[in-house]
Image 1 (spheres, rainbow, N blue to C red):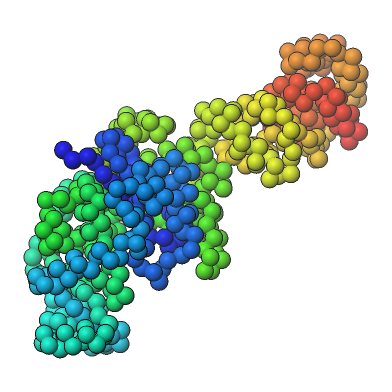
Image 2: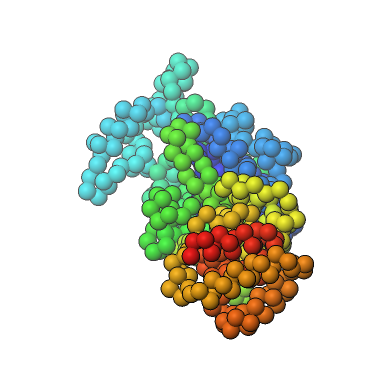
Length: 507
């Protein structure tokens, strides 16, 4: 059996939607599971849609997710170049071969003539006329013009495209790895352009030629590409490469949270969650779109969440490392139906991954989040201790700021309203005496702090539970945070006493 070779072939037109990253992921998992190669190929044949910085953005996204290709414009490889624009010269020969064999033709129609065709031949039965087997004989192309006229037009430099000549009323079929047998009637497909007037191939020609030359064995793409399949099937056949055609799988859509239609960038903006892997600012419009990375997701969680959007291994397990995903992944377990995106579930994955991450893994991310919030961190070992104390309370990386800033600076605002209703002189005296007692206390560990706190509470005949909330609010500012005696041990004796005294001054 040939070595498994898969590819992800995006157009550099903007940010990468989570559906695109899932396509990368399934390609990557399949390749790794079978000991094969994962190729990144940039499909930049449509120069009018090219966006500066988009290719670099795609590379960075894959790097962040840990889905690094074996071959790409950056990594190279024996089947390069890996940008279609750099392969431009090789496509024309295949298009011309198809023309010579009567399977494609030159079309000289101007944009105005194409527009006229759409208006002239519009009927109730065909409200959107296409350049197909019904209308090609009415247009200006090498099927309707004499050979001498065609040669003259070409020699005079009149712009033309090359179109595939779709057969009338034939059935073409293939076996999809997810959907099973899929069939199409060629009468329903128009004569797609294969080579544009600027000499660039369209997606239809380029994807077939490149997959053949790069020895791609399996092609996985979104189900929105299914309507293009009959054109590609015929190109594989017409070019004589039928026996080399990759196995195809058309992946289900990622749906809006309510299940009605494909999830879009606009849905994310409307509902308040990211749909791109990383922040993206469109250089043409300056439009900004937030990414999962900057929102505070770990790549491990993002990848885990995406894997489960349309696939499971049948065991009920939800948390997988990338190694476990590689081991368990199979295309047979990918669902046929679309998967609803649930941002709360996405956050659940991130929370679980934060909890299972080592403190060292989280250190640079949390440190940056604190610095961004204006909190300076001088001691990494102290921050590691803090991370260990608060990570179970954090869902997204920015949550670490709120959950840990009181370890680095006294709270600016105290929730005094939570203390006042049950505050009395006895409690006031208790905390005054506690501050004095602790000033002289030698051992400053959580157990020693807790023991002396409880001893004094007993001496004052006050229940410990009634004193712990005021103590927490003095240290933290509100009703949150890890064990209060652990906090006191971490911030140190002087800071603890200073915060008690500050709290007393407000009550």
